[in-house]
Image (cartoon, rainbow over all chains, first blue to last red; front, side, top):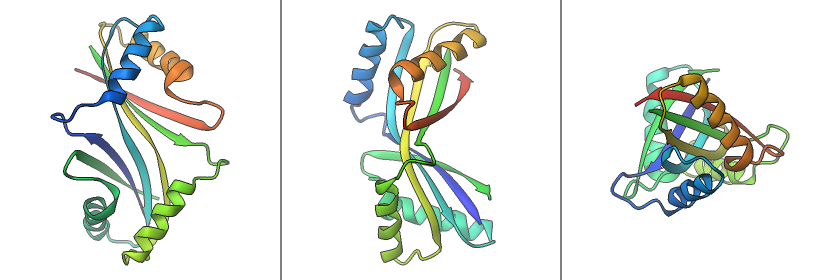
Length: 82
Length: 82
């Protein structure tokens, strides 16, 4: 069995108002040295099956089809055997 | 300068309806071998300053005070020098 740890962030070219709002809030809490904040999704998807390459291909496919909006988002993931 | 890669997930004891909905959707797309889906937040926070220990302590503090709801969420993070 494999667990995919998927990180999804807005593409660099896309404005991140949520990140900017949190950056401002951290500044008002006294964290003036915060240079940048980006906010996205984190998913853990566990898939049955022994073959690593098959699991990797499947996770890519699920990301492209459902889990991310590839027009405005980028994703990366790591596979961990569980 | 340090970049914190922060993963935030609901505690195991807390129901994750979003994760369940996505798991069902993946099943209906034909991915019947998906055993579990958990969905949370991913944040990248860049802080100025040279000292790793100070950056680590600050990121913990920011997570506890603003970035996560520690009643229902757990967080982990990695620090990367940038």
